[in-house]
Length: 167
Image (cartoon, rainbow, N blue to C red):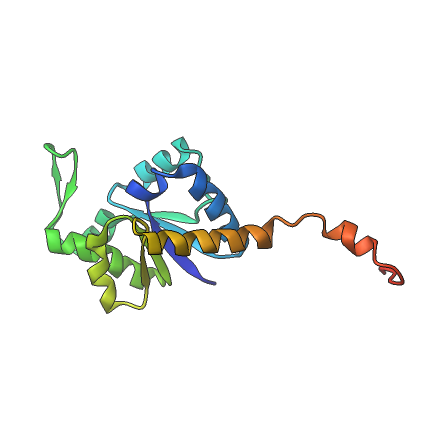
């Protein structure tokens, strides 16, 4: 089964109506969708639900960069100034590529190009959704998924075929 990963902040939270439709079609194709963000998984799932995303309809599972880094033994800390967890800059920018490799993701969609450079070391394709090229790739995929998953009048066409009797 194919797996894609997608960023939350700047991507799923910014264009929720588009992404809910798109990810719904992706899930219908049997593709697993993992959401990756810097916040803890329970907070991330709560934020997704606030925007109308539903587990098993729009995403398969949510993963935290800091949970991943903590499991690796990396030094992380909580910053009250930023009200979030922190780690070294290089560790942070490499984290999504590492996670995608571990999860077996074929594509990662993100709005922050600083994550892109670490993807040159893994087999996951990085799609930067702020550039016109990235947006057009996503839009083309959306249109083909929509065509594949919204044709509901097949039975009418099937039943109107002359000389053919269904069993």
